[in-house]
Image (cartoon, rainbow, N blue to C red; front, side):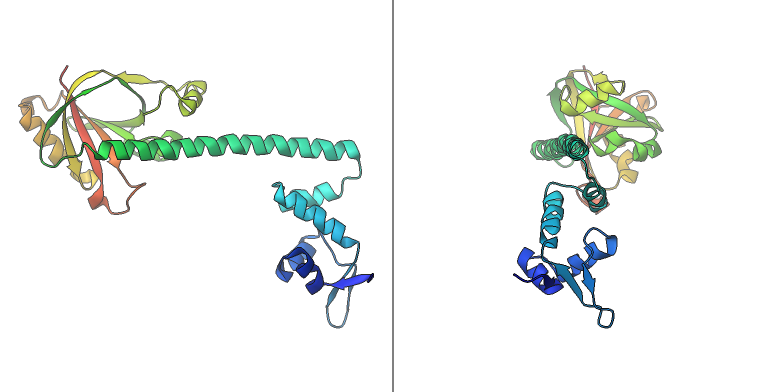
Length: 255
């Protein structure tokens, strides 16, 4: 059995790149036992393979490289076990966060697919809609720093020239909304009943054109300053980059 092996041989045994081994050397997790001062060629003691196997194991179970160096410096059984238990807890936390993220994606897709079936152009339609929860966020610029903006469709409330925005809580109560409750975020229910609905196509800056058409159809133009038109984004900037392809549903509560 050879006492030393080259960097190329070690890379071949583990089916990894030489560049990765050089990186391990650079960060100090696996330093070759011998380095030729003239050529710079690295040579590893044969039993350093076991240290590399440990590094590969820790990487496969999700340890970040900076934590591996600390783990390899542990020379106490209980401390090593404590480290792995702590890492296991972190993995569980990340797993739960991934499940929530996937839930968000699935809810978004289901919402778009369902709502696409109802989209019509240049026509006011009437729908009986069950009560739905929303949480109010505030002015348009407040959306971008609020986490719920990225979790749920945006809901808008236009009364005359005043407008406020929030998150349309598709799935209350559900796993994501439980976190909303935990953070004491106020929820309000849109009333169940009949709504006059009209679809806006294109940039949000032109949405007042569609609002006016809906008000005109409902003979409510003279009440434009007191009637609240609800807008719900269906196809938004998170789905398409072209504002001309945005789609929002406009609603007026009829009772």
